[in-house]
Length: 304
Image (tube, rainbow, N blue to C red):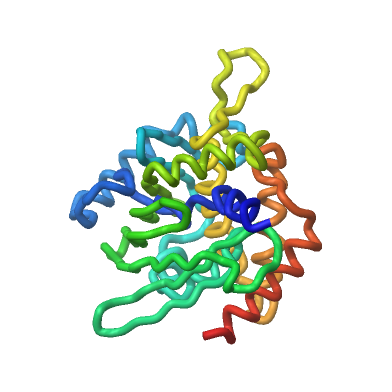
């Protein structure tokens, strides 16, 4: 069971370089600088460049996803138009505690707690399988949180973790967002990480067993043919980048509801959104997901 649980964790391997995963063009192993004064203009230009892909795609929403693979790292990127004003997005995501409410929506996130001291802010995230489990069964990943930029029309957030489970490291989740006309926001989310030899062996084990039938979103078939979706490690990173994006969207969508009803709406909306892509994202039934996440959310509020 422990071996299977470890393989299941690769269905999480996300978080990112959150959600996510998270959000800039650099891979997990890079050391790119914080967004400069041209970042807002650059993201606006990217929105214009992707206008065709955003308006016509198989996702049934204004979204573009891409992934890259090298011998030792993976990266997923999502660009999407959000139907929320930039001020709402900025206020919601420019707060580390809110990120825990986002990350816990992901099937494999078991716990998240934000703490701040003189050294900075850290998100302590526990990663596990797709079912309920105790925290001592999960893997702890500590993300350093930083608000790289925040202006009247641009937001940049970076989450970095040096070490991850099973031979993975250099997790990077970077999010950037810019204001659009008509009360909308353009978001870019990057999720990336690196892996060593032992991580590659573990990944191969996952892909050869419980992950053998899993696919991503990139269609490799020639135009006009039946879709053939990419598998392997790129399929892994694409699924998790999408899960984190959907978590962000579900969190933002629940903000207009009364506080007491927000958690249930976030959970319901995230699950419903993942079920739009069952070939890639279906793992458990709705009742199993809701029961597990309600329990995990309570634990997140109370456990040290």
